[in-house]
Length: 139
Image (cartoon, rainbow, N blue to C red; front, side):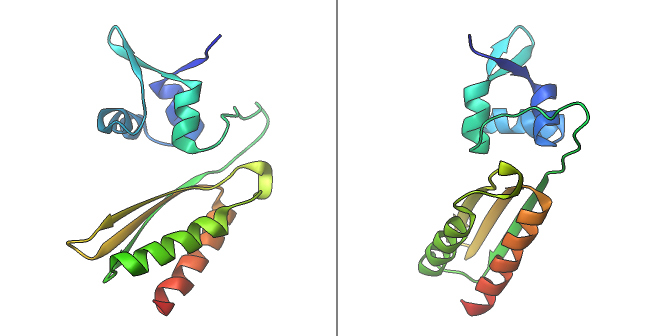
């Protein structure tokens, strides 16, 4: 049987504000079914968004997750592709705590800007941000 989550449950699982989750639904980034006046999100759709299995934290376990947005200006498509490929290679493979980082990239060619959206463990995110910092100096 499929498992469904409320917007509030998804927000708590991802460490996001409820409005952010609703925005993801409105933008089509997170599939949801409207039941009456409320949305329900299937486990598979939530896993598609995060790129990882949904694991609810144990009652006694404390877990932190961070979301970061990095905007890199003055970048063309070729450099953005190289940076994106390197970042995705850096996050491949197992991570501490078994939770993968989730990275999305958005290139605005007109503005010459690349946006990286990173979701995951604070230590893993910090390590990835160090890599991004180094890569942007080399471009």
